[in-house]
Image (cartoon, rainbow, N blue to C red; front, side, top):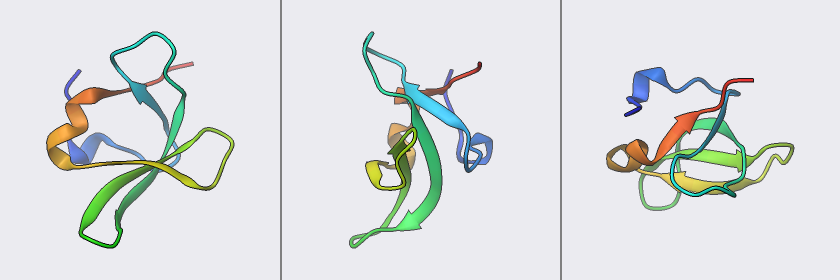
Length: 66
């Protein structure tokens, strides 16, 4: 699934769509981070930013449904 910015929901779970052992991430929002705005994710259960993704790279993640 190709995610669009409007489909990302703060607090929802996501993961990288390629790879079998990717961590579950929590979406923190579209935030300023030093050199621009990035979609920020933390590893589930941690408040710290673990990954930052540009709009062009949203195709690499998918929502996790439980």
